[in-house]
Image (tube, rainbow over all chains, first blue to last red; front, side):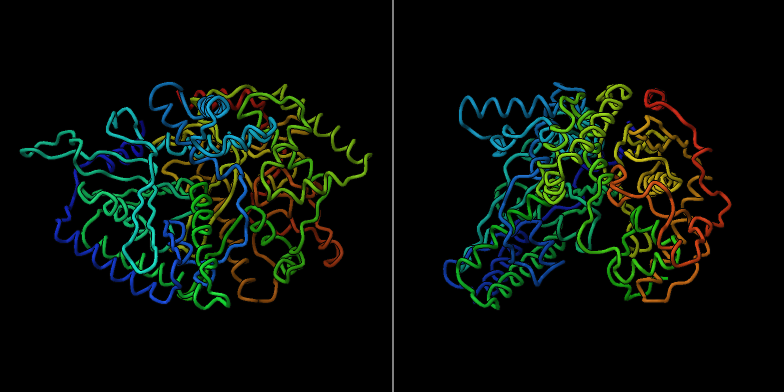
Length: 314
Length: 309
């Protein structure tokens, strides 16, 4: 393994630097609820706002278009690469394949077979993928191979051992605000951090703090700290009885860049500010729109979903 | 060069850099939008796009069944290629036969010459490489058609390959050197080799990457960035002090995509009394395809294997 691989692997294993106590955690939650409630006060009853990492970035970079999208969702290779890439990566870590290039094909075939035999779609893209010709499938597999290879080459998976979870469910939390505001957090890998016991470093326990790994396309943009902290905030809100993720590592494979945020109260506060600003931007755009109907605002969810898929794919 | 209010990052791609280093009229045309507007599809562009898809397919699944059908399937998988698909489908039958024939000929060459790539070499296709410089004011952004080797911190372990469906052109060497530069800037170690593979002839030009190559690429890039910055600030075009050959590359890094293989700039010929843009290069290392080391794909793969070992 290279020095870079070793250092990034160490980043997702080393003991936490800071701990957020329960009182501070409750205060952060209250700030978020108050801020969001104020931001959505003018939205029509029944409106839904979904906040994702993609919508946060979009609202910051293109606030004027925070809830505009007429694009109808249609599958394309970049929308598949994250989920197929994660499944291929999992298969590689389990030792079933030597690398993503040999894993993506069998993993995709297996997903289609299961869908055809049971009718259950584990990834949603199975019907679309099965309808593609050889060349179309190859493009999908190539995209997934690229995506998975960037992660596969980043970590020393042997050193991480069993302390990892690849993919998994999104973190969802609904804010108790006058209008429905849903926060959705998605990371690619979760690792259990080591602990320090009696001055000695040991493997962390099941209920101990974790690190989240988030993969993005392009290069880190302004606000990347708050973006990464948002993932820890959402995970903490979803599971208030579990320790907060203590660290979030962001990977931008296109630029071969990694960035880390240690999660403390200040990082969470910054993430709360970003969420409130995002909701306020969306609410303002929706309210100013000529027809600020429930349907208009509801398109935010569609925008966020499409943007999430795009960003995850990118 | 870039002030506090420099605005969005200056995105530098292969094609933009080449155009910025071209003749003044060419650059001014870029500034005033002469090159912008709707895509102009051509037979070479269509051939390049189709062969790109087939090369990617061969690397990914190891086979090509029916070249034209597979390639069209690949293009159709993504809706953003719909205009090109429509253009191809709208060709007259004689042109379609010509296109099919060329695609099949190049696909045969790919099948015969490209060895299977071991998954442990981590082959990636159409890979984006980005390097942000000058506190975010400059964004170097290129695509490579194939990258092999596991990136490492202390040893050059990656090889980059550009695939071209047209003929050789000196600008292709500039393009692959730019790829080497971007990879060296973004990663702890530079690539050990950059190559251009010509699907039309089966030739592979390989340049081992050393500090001289990277320094020359950096100088060319810097001159181009200055020219682009001048254009962005609305300055009148003037003669570039440094640069390289004209045209012949694409932003996407995909094979040719219809660029001229001749290396001539018709605009310059018409407007600048025939002075070729390539003569504006003062660096002293005017690219020449003759100088490039010609290899077979298998030789490059063997070299990569040796590096990995």
